Image (spheres, rainbow, N blue to C red):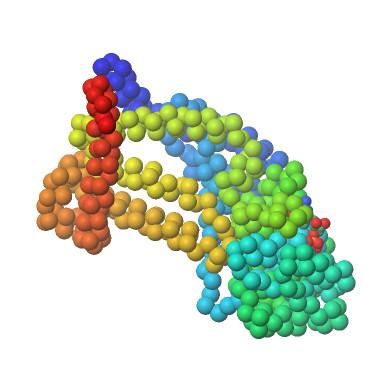
Length: 439
Ligand code: GDP
Ligand code: MG
């Protein structure tokens, strides 16, 4: 008995919170880490300020120090900031083909990324056409033609004597004629942001009306990333970015700068010169690379797992005493649907409909259940039978939660089903405890 009391105390035990005082040191460390990762200084400042406000008053998880808790908050914030589809991730528009415009400075990897994207889409059974508009360097057209040949994707080009805007326009026409799924327009870059380049990009953009304008950013860009992204975003309103050369030793701070400055998502990461070296962007991975504090976060996860195990045990114990209620339901539902795991989505707009949709539906369903459960009276929440049996109560809960009665019924069914599932498990455990053979 004393052991289970101890356990219970550990579970509800009072924990500390994050204060200005105990955040001071880890704040400095995070600041240093971000600057070392080449996140642009103004971005670091804004981020630190935001995270400080957010973290203040956060409960410190049992079994970890405030430092570790703070790093966890920072990591979550980084993931949240860089993750999600963002305003650029829209679905395929009805009029095919999807038109993707590549933008960026010279040498960052635009042409390479255009080829990689084409191969990526080809593997997803999408047909592409590559369009070469870099007429300033004859080698640039040859480069794209060679890439196209290597991956067996057609390349549209009109040599170096035709206006790039005209090439882009005719390239898109050719794509329509061929009936491809996507036209990828490669463009010329300059060594620095200049008006010629931006003017040409703007003209190409208004000529072809791309569904995506992807800014290609070299991960080695460092401190300049913020200014660069601002310039391109102001000029052509990018829809997202591709971060290249992440196979190098850059910590990838540019990713944070891109997102923070433009609000647009990183969609892909280039990890080598080969055409296969393209990966979807995973905010978790990038956050951990930028922050470089994997060990600290491992500590946090261990403490969290320990508590989760206690929670699961407690839920089973409650069930054995037939006390499984709506609060337990919400916890279990979230775990079983692994909502965090589903966040790892491919970022290509329009080509990831299913997973986006699944995630959206799982989240919506959870929100609905949560709203309904919140609208219950305490006795209904902890004693589900009275609600399951009373139509009048169910109607009231539906009204108070703003959900339909059908949704409430659905929740009752889901609850009963989960209870019996978990109940089966607990019977098994009881039998085991009693020394019986559960089979
Ligand atoms: P562009 O001028 O923007 O079109 O750049 P290119 O596509 O021609 O690439 C410039 C150089 O960067 C080439 O040598 C590419 O092979 C190289 N490159 C492009 N992407 C990557 C990448 O993800 N990793 C590495 N290591 N090299 C890359
Ligand atoms: Mg190029």
